[in-house]
Image: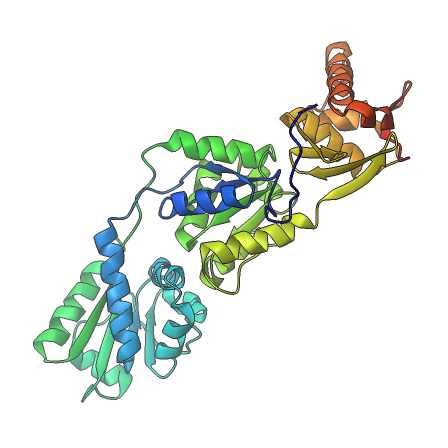
Length: 385
């Protein structure tokens, strides 16, 4: 047993928990905030960095539109909408952007029509596959451009990008006040090994939560999992014991659409607020028992045995959590193998591995270990008292 005595989890609501970070931008800020809250961060960016100058340029354009809202908005791609809104939410301006676009005439092309709901706007007209070629055609669709301010969402690399660039040029030539909303695209992460290690931790449920700050990170993580042949396993984990946490509504909407269940998000798109809601959510999984006449609190990888900190290895933690789910109920070795070792079979060697791990866990728990009982030929159980 560890000699150190915890000073309590009140000021460290995530003490004992492990949280995965899928973001690149702001990952250090997240990691620092999580550590202050007591968590162990696991960083595995699924996407590479976007040059800060491009992010700042998009934020500046957004602020300009907030100050002088457009009368016409042209949306060209779902990913571009999500990226724009995600960047605004990251700056705490998501709600303000929705308000600024509320009175505009909105035109949408292709998959942008369905995604426009994230901005809380109604699409007045759907553009043909080739988009619009110039100000005259746009004027016919919107009922005129006299005195109009037109915002055109552009996403680099999108098939509609070339046609959109032509529209912007035509509007500028016609003397229209056009705002080019250029949404940068994050490249794949250069270090895919870190992202793959994070994916493995999610699948094996060695993290308690996984955070996303933008919609493209959710899509990137799903693509990574599918490419690694672990799509179903990752989805099961993020619909079960691993909590998916998103920075804002646009990110949460994409996560929910991807099939993640129990997605949580803070009211304000801020790192501190997300850490706070994580503490509240993971706090509901804290287990309190009396084993061997000793009070035991299970907080992720940490067992507080009479206030003494006992940090558990992954399989020790898995065993204790599996038994603590149903205290007093016998859990068979075969079930423990499935849950903790992820093995579908059982033989002498595997059964021995369970026995060794249980004996080690009993020793780690010290006086509380007496509450971990072996039931011959059946399995193991936790007995309170």
